[in-house]
Length: 489
RNA sequence: GGCGCUGUGGCCGAGUGGCUAGGCAGAGGUCUGCAAAACCUUGUACAGCGGUUCGAAUCCGCUCAGCGCCUCCA
Image (cartoon, rainbow, N blue to C red; front, side, top):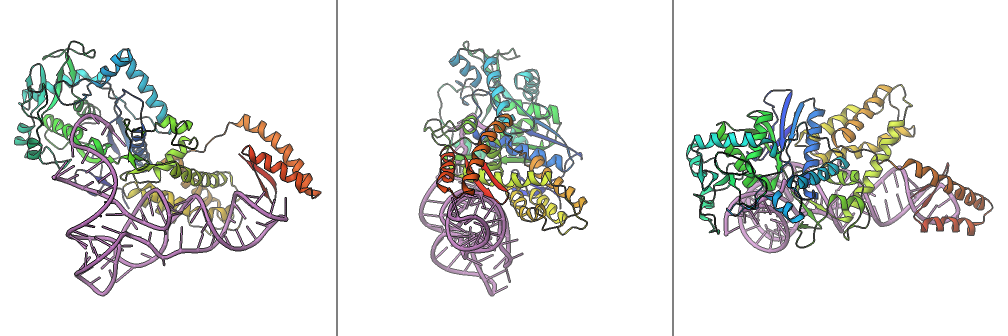
């Protein structure tokens, strides 16, 4: 069975056929680095990281391009629009590139904690001003963009005439209605039409991010960087373009228009969009205080959380939902995910250390692998993959305690399967403890355990229970098993 | 108002025209001085009302509820 992906452009699941196999080009819209990366961003990039990982698992050679938007992101589409980066810079009294640096570093830190691979290329908008100016010139020459008061706008009406009403093909939007919805905004008379969007904006005197261009000293429009950088590094057409659903319109719609203006064929084969994330059932919003930063999740520093959650638990939680479904973050959901994650990883880690293979196999690794792969081949269905991995836990436990025989060949295939799926595809890794600290703690607790064992041996349960209860009150749980007592906490 | 999505057992969350999702919690059992842990077993759910069908939670229609996008957003 081969990979199928849901293409937002057609609204259907389609067979995935790269243009030049085994190479795959994938472009994902990255963050605008003007504030700390938030959970929704993180989910999108974790989703595409999983997609990247699975494509690699299938043997594709993937060039994964994810941009950093560090300029040109307008606050709104009116002429009074201001660049997000420079606005923040004025607020914080910093150089614009200082803001960019600060939040780029923050973004990378969070992505590293969530165990995502870095993209193959991570281009910045400010590093491609020349290319953007060239693209604008080309569009002006073709009559698909016009100048107004030092700024350049894309002429959507003209584009639609030449491309058979293509504007709106991705977001399924009716261009006529967009025209009718025209609102009168102060100071935006320069545009011929409300739906036209900026390719170049003339900078106001107080605007501190600015570059020379043939038209004015200014900065590029937001949508242009992605068109320019995706085509520069992946060529046109390329295989996959991804991003959050909220970018479908206008951002991706505009990207398609720009790319078609520069090169008439469809720029992208498969458009993949990840769904949004809610927090306690509501959309995240700074104004209502319903927000959560990844860092707050990892440290537990939020009134919404009862405890800290390890980045791997967060990632596991995300992988338990399909990337095209809305995912609701809640403390209870994370708590349940943590338990499931621990159970899965415990057995997985025991499996890795298990060496006692038998002569024949009573367990069919191939069937399990097929199930894992068909789950992922069906538009990257990670919830099914995880369910399948859990299904495998029972026979694995039987193998571990000697009730089920497995050949050495199958044992290594089984280990490979779990490693490939858990670490490779899902991008999960075992939570490593602070070993040194743990060891010291263990020595102390072992002494108490021994005292309790002695008390129990002489049936002095008052003393033994006192030890257990006092340890319990500081969060250490004793577990009596057939091979003695162990602890957790 | 426009476009789109969702409504699944206590909670989270897949899927599907007839065949076990899975996780968490709960219940029963094994073990144990007791407890915890661990292990084993266990749930017959799919918003409501109509319709199509031999058969629908799965397809169609309506109703109700919720959500997202439509302005910057991943």
